Length: 285
Figure 1: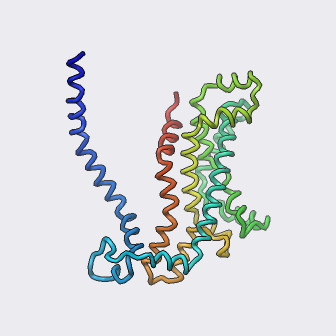
Figure 2: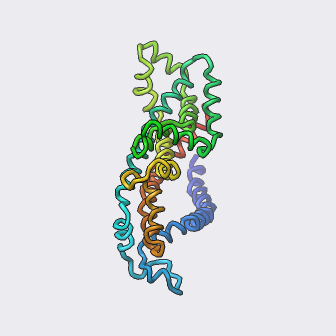
Figure 3: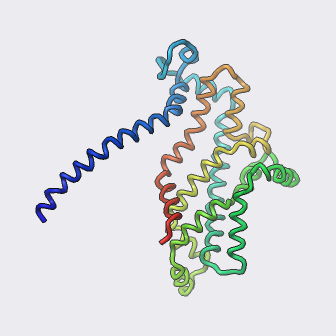
């Protein structure tokens, strides 16, 4: 037993020596993949005179915030960011609620045609959004929803991907858990709120990160259903900077950095929940 304890530090040192080259390789690959993003941040703080010269300036010699000030003054990016936050948070919350309820029905309830209905929902994932965008536009236009938050939010309050993710996660729970709760007089809604959702934090975290980033990056639908600066989102707003001042590349990069910071922050904060939720839904048992 004592000999085994003496061998543990040696094994740990040997493991550390073998993992060190892999760590260095991962670090190099990570820096290589992040180089475009890091260079964009550097350009955002760089005066235009430093960018358009014969020297290869990777870092600004005289950092300035003028590019950010120009981007905020040329276009109402603050309003665009606020609109995107409202739309993204509403879509994220709506999808978590609707998808979790639908997944509960497919996982714990027995009703006629359940498997067929679930396969029909999954089949909608094969339909590209461009195939339905015109019909959706004509529908919301007839309802006079254009130029409003509801036209940006309501069509995306549920998704087949979210239903699939929650259903796969719920498959890990034994049906006896639901049956025991029902025998104690627990209603379906109470079972979901007090038992199922607290145990589904990895799935909720994964769904929240995935949905928020997708909603934040929407471009085609907001471009089609909004035309005023009051309702524009960040992706539309940043494309408008090109038409305002196409010669100021540093200003446009500064605007891009401003709008990608929230999505990157959400991904960094929720990456553990995203990975955990995806893997928990992929392995049953």
